[in-house]
Each structure stands twice: as structure tokens, then as C-alpha cells.
Image: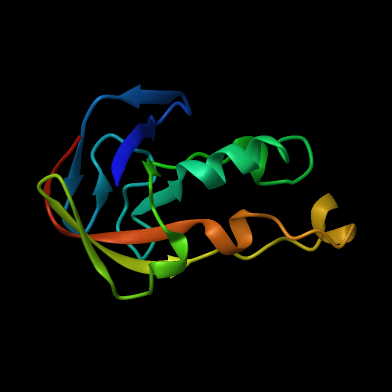
Length: 133
């Protein structure tokens, strides 16, 4: 596994790609507007899933505005489970959620399509602060 992309969204809503990020225990990624604690501190996608989302970019409600903090090349989503701890650089993350709930008014849901985010997005808590690169 290797980190392919690191992204945060600042308080103004600007997406910023970085070479490294600082994971803060109990919060999330430093500088990310969603680093407020809770169970979804860090969002993770495999590179393969990110590419598949590009085919759905204009279909769903969430996909056009979605971003993941970490895009990981070589991540086998089938082997990830809730409670699993993974070390990335100096940080330790604990998987807290896999998939997200879809909205009933989403065009993909109304057409009977299943959004890749509903089953492939991974959320984690930062259990040990550290630099991810």
C-alpha cells in the first residue's frame, strides 16, 4: 500500500492537495474543516474506487462534492473491517465506519443504482497522532 493522494478542505471550502499531513489524535487531519472529532475524523478511499467514482461524477448528490483525505493505492477494501488499526507513517488510525448512508432524493437511488460511496468509503478515528506522507 502507498498513499497516492492527501487532501484537505480548508474552512473556506477550498480543496488542497498536500505531500504530507498531520493526523491529530481524537480530531482528524490538521487544517481539514472536518477535523472535529467524532467517528468520521479521516476519510479514506482506494485509488481504484476513486477512479470508479469519476464514472459517476454527474449522477449522485454526494459524489460531485465528495473528497477523501487519503487515497491509497493497493488498499484491499474487502480486507478492511471496523475496529482494525492501520499505521500510516507515524499515525495510527482505527477504522470506524465503512460506507455511508445514501439520500432518498439522490438520482442514483431513485434509478436503483448503488453509489460506490455507500459501500467503499472508509472512515477512521486518529488513535495516535503523527505525520502521514
